[in-house]
Image 1 (spheres, rainbow, N blue to C red):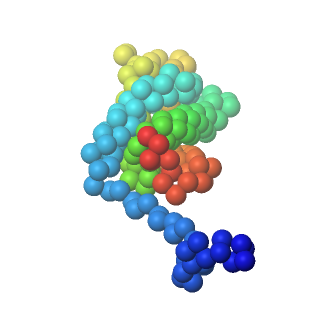
Image 2: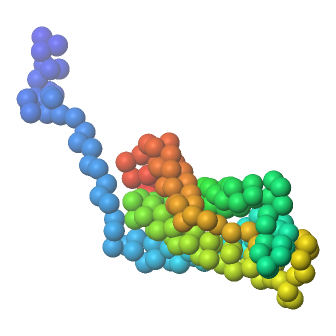
Image 3: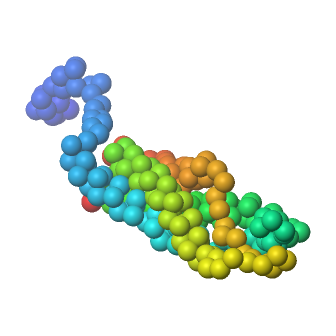
Length: 195
């Protein structure tokens, strides 16, 4: 009898509560609050193209050319390889910058999400364009020839970038790195609530 009286004291459990589980509410993507910081990220990242261009102009090798009769210039043997080296140096600088930018934007914990990813990618694309434009301008001023060279003289011609596709290295590296960080985080809100 003692057992039955102890059971009677407890209130009965409703049948609806027996199969109850915690309902997980997914966090929503915040767009409006992230727009102003995203514009700031785009602007700041785009301005990084100027020092990247300056660094490329100092690191990329010049092509040594011999002046032939008629004023034309002919590259010395093995100097044509520098066209590839110019592209490779620019690409490596862009990849490194894209990785650093993505990690820096990821550390803005309270703003993590697709808006900041888009800001980092757009800013990196603009940075690549600025780096290409400013880099060739810096290189042309660095290797400027002030007086007409004589026939047979060897002159250094400024490095150049022969394709625009190289600009995509930086935004692709930023998108890939940010994506890896988001997957590695594995939280629904990417840790925003902790920021």
